[in-house]
Image (tube, rainbow, N blue to C red; front, side, top):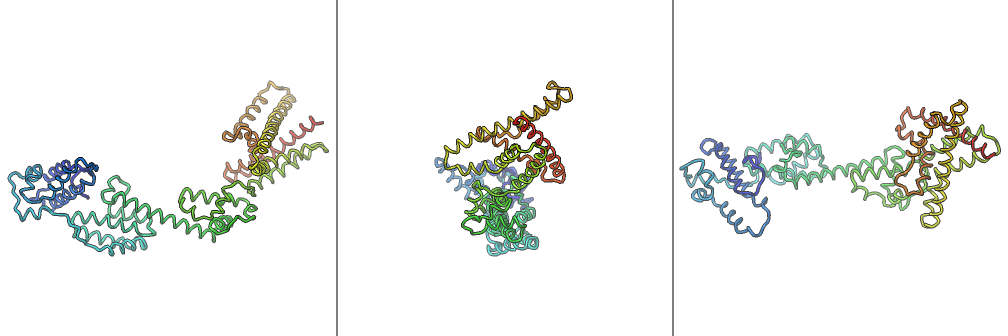
Length: 468
């Protein structure tokens, strides 16, 4: 229990409030019936008065009054106590006159005579950090010695000295601080924790804990760069290495750049200071948009490469619709972004390219929507429903929902059609990612591949009929 809790008030710089609290507590801590309680109360009162100036605002216009208050607090003679504290002992014990010898004892001037040496405290803190639970018994023994031999000021000083010594120990863990806090009732997660361990020391403890976590994370990264899986070893080997430039093979390993970016993003969230230790050439390499192989690109190439031969098997021979369609797929999935990156230093040429890309993308989207609608109407007419049936209206609604889902809201206006086409073509991979590559996702991808094959075959036949 600290001085403010003994007085029963919150920390304050108002000495009048401190004196009134002292007078209230004197009713239960009388020197004749409870000398030990009175001693603790008196020590708490003296300490609170000496700390009140630190809690008062620094105003120069009331310096004379504060100087007078300090001068009055320094008086401990019996005749001065009666004059300086008329609402304390004099009001509780009418007619009570303290003898000079008794008053000298009752004043209890605060003493910070050392019960332990700084070296002893530093050694204990080092042992706690290095050995943990094994030294909690030694901590309890020292705390018991301070509690029995020391006064209130020394007991409070013990908590601060221990916190300061721990804050200087590399390797301090949050687990250890929580164990010590529970053992000594620091209650670091409570508002009143600042009384035993001041806020400045709490911040120092947290800083040392953060430093420990940072060094541990760096050590784990170095360890994974040697003993992790292949992609992790390659990514961390480049990030933690000293290469002056990224090697060519870094672009040829699928997913390597994404893995490196993931590692850097994780550090930015947890320990951003560690990013400064990484290879700056690698950080520049992954921050720029570059052409490189990825698992997404390889999967989509295999997916559409398998779909087109099946879809073209029933198309009329001699027509270029199939090769043109496959060339458009390759362009939107792989070439459009590469061309844009190559034209960054030629704005006028980039503007012409974006305009042409927008026109082609709009034409493709319109052809896809109209083609699906025509196929639906033809199928409905074959059943005698015609355009008035519900099936065409349902297909139109589905088409607009799909277009809305792939339409970009952040990209510039002329780039939105091209991005929508690219997202439609990458929908197989997006489906896998949405299902988190679970077991269920692969049968669904197979069904989706059959649907795309049938739809593409029907659209190519329709285009061939119009071309013929």
